[in-house]
Amino acid sequence: MEEFLRYLIVNLLGTAEGMELTQNHHAQKVVFQLKLPASEVGKIVGKQGRAIDAIRNLLSLAAARHGQKATLQIIEG
Image (cartoon, rainbow, N blue to C red; front, side, top):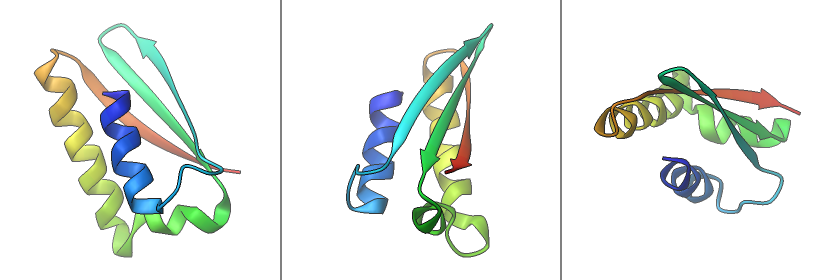
């Protein structure tokens, strides 16, 4: 799932520079934390949050294929 998520994000941003993706496991749930520079957050969120909603939906579907749940948190920094 991490490779899939990294692939999506790098293609939206155009580069992996300044991006930090970590994951924490909690029982049946995986929480991904994406740390980005403030100038790059808008590219991931998109207009009215549509891009981030789509990314989160794809992540949830990918996790469900492995019998897990997953979520993505964005950290500005």
